[in-house]
Image (cartoon, rainbow, N blue to C red; front, side, top):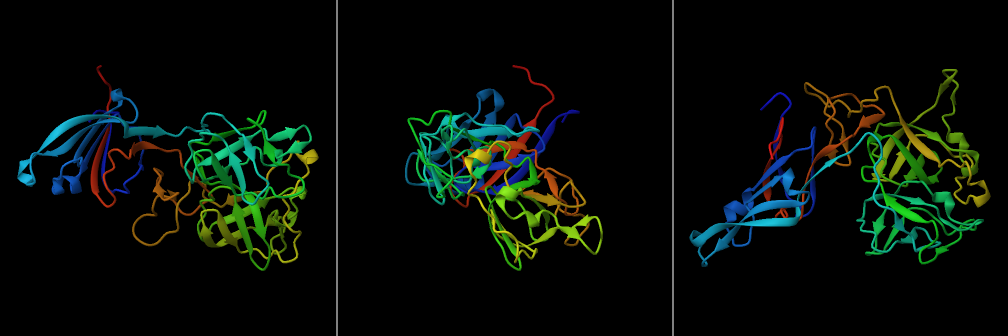
Length: 365
């Protein structure tokens, strides 16, 4: 390989659907060998796939098993061009990137709120931003405008978000579409993780349970602080003073991770002011969302040391990042790149797939 060329190889087990492979570069060529399909040698399977960036995103050239009879010895390979569902690449930037604005037709008063945005194209787990959200100059749901939400998709036109809009200061949105109301997907929502999470509910007590609007990416042992303005109620969580060490704040430690959006924090909030999301629209200008923030000594990320020669590289949303090893800290640089294996070349669930990826010094067309 040349001075600036890059190559990588690996093996994965197919999920039968889209699979992202994170790399420290964006490849120009990707080759797949579906070892399971090659060994089975059954008609219609795809043992070999090749993609060059000149083909375009989502395309591929496949070699497909054909049979002239029932015996595997009568099988042979044919070539086919795939124009969708093949190989594509991705590269997250240093700032958030957004999908197209999609008009909102309606948002219900409910917990969880249901958003209608015709032909949204989202899948469950995507993270979106809602914009506008005024039904009139003094009514609507602008309280939740600009907060990242993970979506649960119901159908091609509707999805729900984890927020209780069934409260007196919220007005249901309706229109064809609602004037000035849009939703946009955040393409790479976790450029830095754990980072900052917006809070949708708090359960107070001898420990504090926090539910966030999008995945928090925290782990047991993570250290967190809070930024909550008086309108949201529970201001006592705002890094209270450490009386044992004057001038030092008291932070909380994650005791348990219930799921991707819920953690239990070791902070006694028994007598704190209840959390409140029923915010009058008159208070929306200048309103900041309630936040839980990751804090710590090492901002390059990492995971707790578990023995061996090195600390492992940090993992975000189940995918290893390209960062070097480090001890547990508050922020992981999750700027990501790599390639995506589309459903058209992913094979069947459980297939063993070997892959190779290349980035070349220069190309001649």
